[in-house]
Image (cartoon, rainbow, N blue to C red; front, side):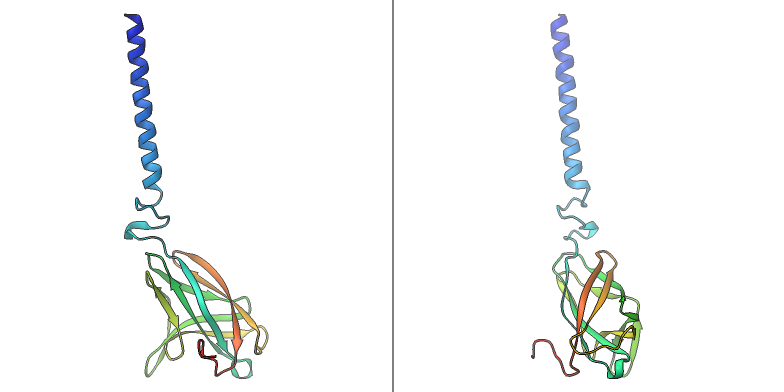
Amino acid sequence: MKGSLGFRRTALAGAALATALGAGAFLVACGADGGNGAAGGGASGGAAARLSVADPYIPLPPAGGMAAGYLTVRNDGGQGDELVEVSSPGASSVTMHRSTSTTMEQVDKLDVPAHGALQLARGGTHLMIMGWQKAPALGDELELDLTFARTGTISVKVPVKELTYRPGQQ
C-alpha cells in the first residue's frame, strides 16, 4: 500500500509540474507581444511600425539662411507611428510645418500610417531648418534626428542639393 501512495504523490506532482510549465510557455508566447506573435504589436493587432527614410534632401538655401528639408518616412509595419520631434546637431532649430494654399503653419506631430508613408515634399508638409552651425554648401550633409512616438529616434544624413533638385528626376 505504501508503494502505491508514493506513486500517486509522484504522479500528482508530475502532473502539476507539467501544467505549470505548459501555462508558463503559453504566457511567454502570448504575453510579451499582446498575443499576436509580433513584437511591439500592441492592442491594434498588427505588427509594430517598421520605419525607413527615403529620398532625403535639403535645397541649398540662399546665403546660408533658413532652409527646407524634404524626405519620405515609409512604414512597412502594421502599426502607425507619429513623428513628434526633429533636431540636428548642425542647426539650432528644426521644426515641422504644413503648407496650405494660403498659409504655412507649424505642427507638433505628423502621422506615419501603418503600411503607408509620410511624405515631406515641396508645397506640402516639410521641415524648416534654422541656425546652421556653418553655412551649407552643395554636397554637405546635415544630420537630422527624427524622433517617433513609438519607434524612437532614427538619425539620417541629409544631403544639400541644388535648388532645382527633385528626387527621381535627376
